[in-house]
Length: 267
Length: 299
Image (cartoon, rainbow over all chains, first blue to last red; front, top):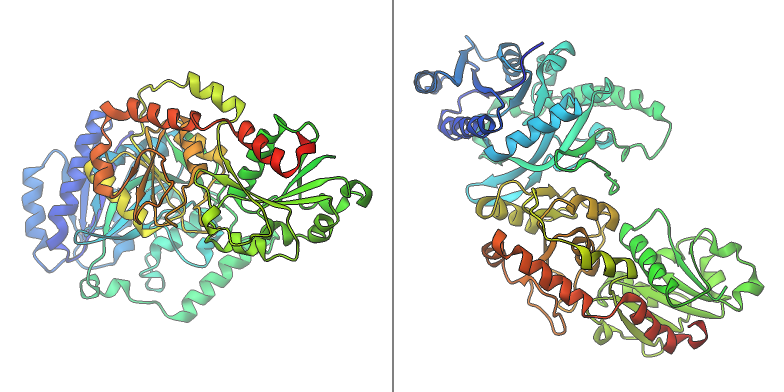
């Protein structure tokens, strides 16, 4: 079994402009965790970048040798493959996935770690604040997991997972069919496997909304036929719950370390 | 039965709490009172209804249940019970029902009389004061240190997302944030039952929310839930405050709120909110005044 602790895995593809912000927030999070006696590391998975990211990352490795590692994939393989590499390469039991263009709220990472440890959950997430520059645009990942997830995803990949358990379940789907929706597929997979998914009602990170041109090909929309086939099969699986009102059916739970499990009676 | 308080179970969490609170206060005043759901009302025999006062909590919702309008119409006296702004859709819809109410009880912190447009339905304001149990509990409530610096809880709005971000940036990042997408559509933002709100706030220092609502309205159930959980209720008023709104700890802006939220002031802020609440007479006493006017034989 892996040792207790948190690996912050940052998949990066051509986001050199934002690396200082994301990596900086991850390193600050490690300092906060140290104060709580939680060991940690930052692992950046460079997914074949061609914007100079590698040079920056090698400098960061020298500067933060005891806390940061960078792995360089020889060619671009997409976010799912990069996250799976991160799961394999990480040292600690829990992994927090942080996209290279986003930014942690360092003080609250420990709350997520406590939550996933205390509940034995496989997946724990918190609120993400959408920002464009200084402007707040909204929130995401701000609701408990329910069967509404079979209609649309509202839980971002920016979350803490039990790395060993996710690897046992096969990790992220990395095939072309699921490019751009691999995080959604993972959540549905965990639901199908009846894994514990907890929503922790704190703000975990800032989700920076970038201009569309920066996002790149990995966010392109998948063919309708693939999505329709996938969702039809998932909904058939869960139709055996036998109720027409199954969409609000809660499949996750709400947990805060200072409160315990919270009754989500707003469902 | 002298008085039946009727509400729609499984519906609006806010009005379920209002109904239970009304019942709790009324029991101290009226001997023969029962709290029933809309399913039960149509089963009350007609001869009993003819001698009973029926109070419909959130009449529009109650009217959606089969048989409620007919049963209420057969009762001796009909009271509409509301706890929302007079400008709201629910308030207007209640008075547009095919029922002639003998009275309307407005439960809240700020009278809605100025917006009550039906002169044929006598209006009675009841301040949503402390129940007997709350009076005792509040007197014993200590202002001990708490781990959660603040809490923002309610249906998601952009205003509250902005508020959350500022609280994180200027006060403390470790607040509790529970702002799921709107499901109930309550104007009061009644996301959770008061009991759940108390549970969520049991370790929080401040409960904070934004209000863009009507100028002469205050989210009284949020205040009660926060105060009885030991948290200081704080409202950011994004529209100008109206007349008659004298509730403490309402701020004109997010910046003004954040500047005030320092630990050293929390104890005095809590005591000021508690003193305000307890100064307004108990819920039972306020209900007695209303019932004495509406149905003297009940009290």
